[in-house]
Structure formats: structure tokens, C-alpha cells
Amino acid sequence: MDDSVMMQGEERLADWRDFMLRTLLKRRVQRDLAEDLTQDALASAWGARAQMRDPGSEHSWLRSIVLNRWRAHCMRSRTQEELVSEPEAVSSDPCRVAMRAEATQAARSVLRLLHGRQAQMLLLRHGHGVAPRDMARSMGIADGVVRHQLHAGRKTLLQALRTSRVQQAMAAVGIERVAFPD
Image 1 (tube, rainbow, N blue to C red):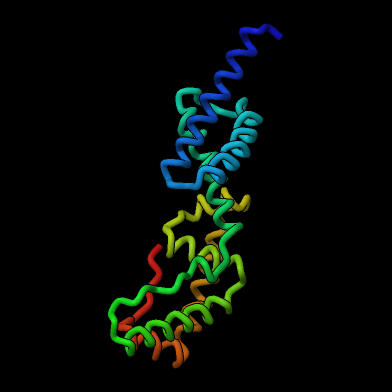
Image 2: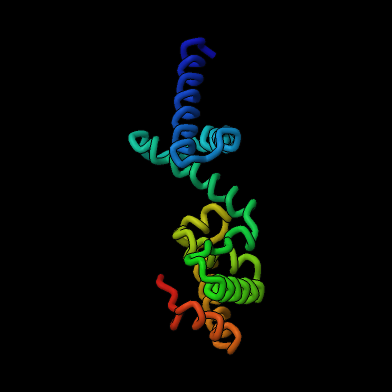
């Protein structure tokens, strides 16, 4: 192989690596993790470079690859308990803090009724605003599977939220009705 072609390939790879790393660091990903994810995404991108349709959209293509790797990492590393974090005390009123803690416990108990994947998908969709299409890509499954799991999880949650203990806890913190926006 010609040395000039080899140099162009190395320069392109270095440019891609720098761009992917900057993309993650802008999102405040820890540097060690960002470097690991960049390395993984770079190997994937280099292997799939022949499939890139439009060289003009190279940065968008690279950004989507590295961000999908980051989302997949987040989904694998987080547990339900971490995704549903304890709410901070809104007031110093001990009664109000206790009621909010009870509502949080009730919500956690309802989430335990769900299949693990359903709970993660609902938390990512409604808690963190991740689009179903992005979830499907990062999990390596079809969009329809994600939509079905979200629907089934919402249905299970709504049935569970009709129980008296959960309704009482929700009413105590001022939640009258639960609706899931799509």
C-alpha cells in the first residue's frame, strides 16, 4: 500500500477520533469513559465506512454512532433504583418530606411490577426524553418492539396506580392524575 494513502487513512481516523471524543466531552461524559466509548465507536465506524451514503454528512453519521454507544452504555449501567432517584426535599416540613418519600416508595414498588426492560424503557422515555427510535437502535431491536414494550408498561402502570395505597401517596403530594404523553 502506498505511504500517502496510509497517511490519509491515519489522518482521517485521527480526525474521526477527535470529533467523537469532543462530542462526548461536550455532553460532560467523564474523560475515561468518553475515550473508551470513542474507541468502540471508532472501530464500528471504520468497519462500516463503506456503508456511509453521503460523505458530506460524515459528522452527523459519526455523532449518531458515538451517541448511540453512549446511550447503550447508560442503559446497561443504570439500575431502576438509579434511574428513579430520590426526590430532593422541596420544603423543610418533615410531614411533606415523609409524604414525598412514601410516594417515591410507592412508585418504586409499582416499577418493580414491570418487566425489567419495560421499566428501563419507560424511565428513559418519560424520565429522560429518549426517543423510541433511539432506544431501539441502542438496544439492537426493532422500533415496534420498543413501542409495544412502552405500551404494555404504561398499561401495567396505570392498572397498578389505581390501587388505594398508590393513590393515597400520590394525593398526599398533590398528584391528582397520571397521564403519559407520547
